[in-house]
Length: 54
Ligand SMILES: [Zn+2]
Image 1 (tube, protein in one colour):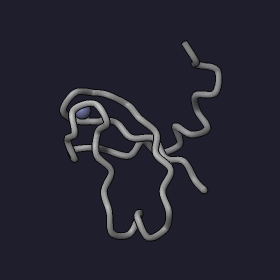
Image 2 (cartoon, rainbow, N blue to C red):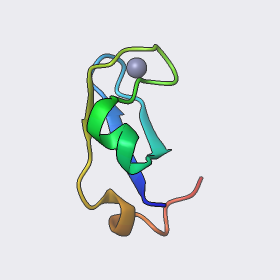
Image 3 (cartoon, rainbow, N blue to C red):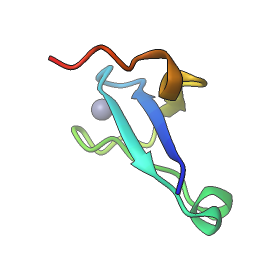
Image 4 (cartoon, rainbow, N blue to C red):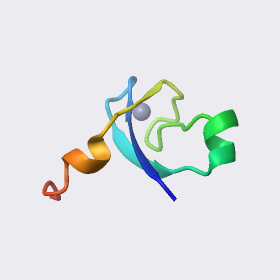
């Protein structure tokens, strides 16, 4: 299943989520840190940051 990365507009937390197709259509992820639904998907982040694990 695909993994998407999101950034929270409220607290700038970034997080990844696995989405099923149904969830992608009807649902909206929320920030795991502050619970806000003001999150933006980061396009391509999936590929872009492979070497950044702290
Ligand atoms: Zn947040």
